[in-house]
Length: 248
Image (cartoon, rainbow, N blue to C red; front, side, top):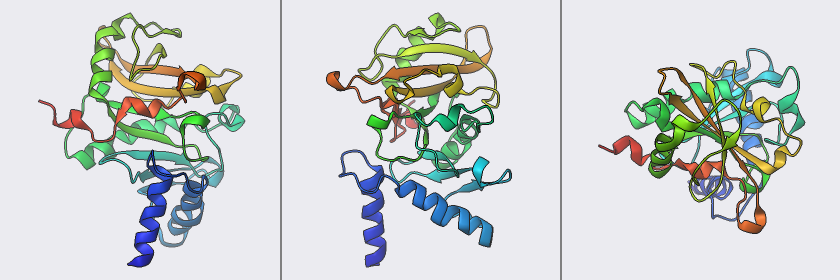
């Protein structure tokens, strides 16, 4: 029991904002040292929920329940990729990790025991300055209620090219663009951003059904401004308590 208590505190220090930062490679150690070996040896992905290495470890991904939040999940590569700033994400043969991240909304709903509207689910990746871990991880969770209200009020004006979103979201400025598509199989926000200074950006994706009836996604790009206290943490647009799931 003492060993489990120590492990629990260690994971909390790694994954929960406001707690002293521990090993920035802790997620990688879990993926490479536990999830993948367990899947290979025992067909058991634990402590992950899913390990997909059908195309090899260099092209695989895992789904893991985050210790923070009632229904937050993380999608992460089984390759060693640091984050949004890693050149590997823009290689011609790079894996599109956003596709399984969008599929993972089913795990969020299962955890909540309720269905969510398309625009109530979000995917987020933080900048290097707004994260605790140096292993690429996409947060899959509910959208904050105030953020959702702002998006619903202004999404009709979002076009198919990057442009400033008209209001701040969670106190921060974002650019936005619309992308049509039922899934993210052919939509990779990393490639749609693809700027030289990727380390200065955070990306958030919110599912949408647009006014013309087409399903798609609202992409939000935030830039780091450390002098202004903006560390590029798009995760701040999510609600890890998922209050929206209980809203009337």
